[in-house]
View 1 (cartoon, rainbow, N blue to C red):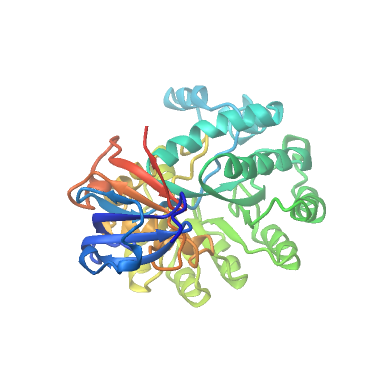
View 2: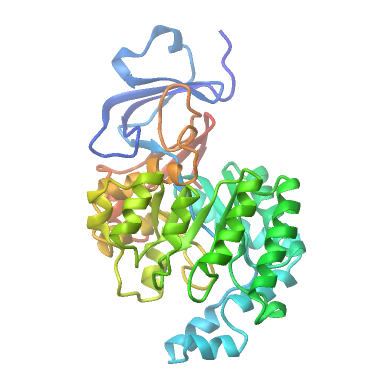
Length: 407
């Protein structure tokens, strides 16, 4: 029987197939053939047909699905560290914006960077995520705000997925902020997003989903709806940045369009959650932004639990409000800041994160027929993944059946 480079058995493992510490297999094994899981179960019951495959003894370490970061703005130029210093010294967001700071400063840096430079800057951030067992990442555009630069960001995102052993999904966030050249003409800018950017970038195969920043400092519900109508005409699924700073009705709109997820959600109310339940929309919580902006309003965890809304956790990796590339740190923050349980947090970066991307059939679960993407952890208890701060216990990552030790 053939034994290809992406065949093997990982044995003597403790396995959490769905990222849930309450469902685990002890003394277990995973058999992989052609990069796909062929069998998973008790090592003692391994079928004889797999016994001649190359064997990796995991030494009683834990195996989970590869982690999923389902909300990032990973591709951008420059950084906003100086602005962070100004804020700490007492400057208001308005003052910083007047000095050319805020999203506009990242737009200027991103527009100024050529594609190779943007790729190099973003690759460093991606590698930091991958080192922590992340095998799937969503990357949004939104720092170009014109056709050429939004295209550049999305091309870089696609290229990251081709050049690194990670699955990248791209989201078009043209409706992120108003570019300086459209100041005071938000409706005209939304027309550009809907009529020019979206169809062109979709035709080039650069868009997997469409997002919009629906907020008082972003775009109105009516403007967001125009973007959603354009996405619907192209059969593109939608997501939304909603209820982060106020509640202007974003979630109600998003659920009408059967959004895959609504993200941030500090100001979510019960009527929004009822609508999410009916639409099958996932809640994506972003504790890094909550922490970095020193927010006080907590997302309504008890209501989300009561209605059994799936909750995902992500880094929101971006230069202005969550400059982090550690999904493990987000597990800790979701537990400490949002009072989530370890089981909720871990499912938030596996099963539920896959749902937030509309990819439950491909990611976030270890089962026969699924691609063999998993992380191996040198820990005694799965709770350590959420408990540790600034420490990375990922000992190796298996992607499509090929093991890469973490260097």
